[in-house]
Length: 436
Image (cartoon, rainbow, N blue to C red):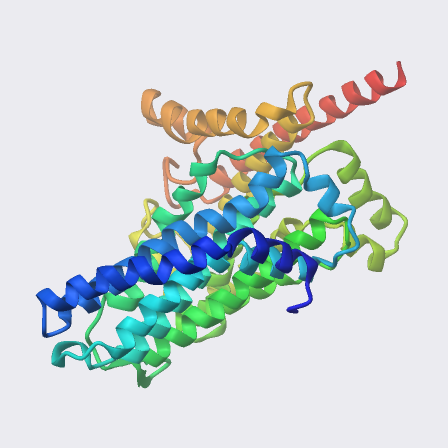
């Protein structure tokens, strides 16, 4: 891995002689002043930790993001794709090579944190340090994966956009690292060491983020793979979350996996390519009855959609999760199976609208146009119209009677059929344009 050309290139760019000399001198002066003014070491420890978080998480995720986005802006991404480097070498070289300098800075901060002595910071010192390292790794990996998604779709992303991911992710990671002083964490009825549990969780989800980066890089390099990774992630996340409630059963597992699969299906529909050629590459192998080839051309969100259909009947089997959701949802008392079925129909409608606009003459605006119409359907029209008319646009929560299960399902089917008609019309228009 050290002989990776991409890794070496980034090392030469990031670790200049001036930087290698300036970092220990500057940090040494900062820590020296802190120690002189605080003999207890608490301030020095806090300064070292703050610098580590700012540099490795905030700046590090920006560098990981820029390692791909800069290639797009400089129009050198296609050269990288045509190189002989494997997806693994490109991911390793960019993710760890582009962030080499910030880890060089972070190393000095970690040494300062390790050797600072103060009675209030002795407890869990090593666990916190491990958690900080893993927190930095996972934020960098998510920023890198988001940039790869843009590169795969040939979309230029502004530099500061990855801060949106950081704003969402950092509080979650920070709460895991700092949010509790409890010595143990209950998981599936077992009292585990809190810090050990947090660090293992961060390590596992960091590995998932690395796997996501690798799979997206494979797709960007036109390497076909079977869509098993996201389904595995959904199943693992459902199993992981249920452990906090010690509520593992077929019904609970199916219910939570169903919810996660719905969310990931929306994500997949937004991030996968939606042009006509990709649709044909997906459909033709299935029509030719070659499932082995068809799976390699099938986007993962279609697999998740099929999984939702399979999991939905099992949500009614001894599921405290679905019972709680039904009791607390806007449609109080409604069966989770009925809610799930309506959610599936609305999801199919939403994705159909996205593909309708993506196959139009201006596909660059497809996502924003779809979001506008979804806001109209989910928020504005149900609020502005009377309840009986608003129900037509948002049948999931505005049904006139909970007992009339067939009515909202029928409305959802009408929505799907209407969008299917629009897609067919769009297909005929595209076919006519290509034949002309």
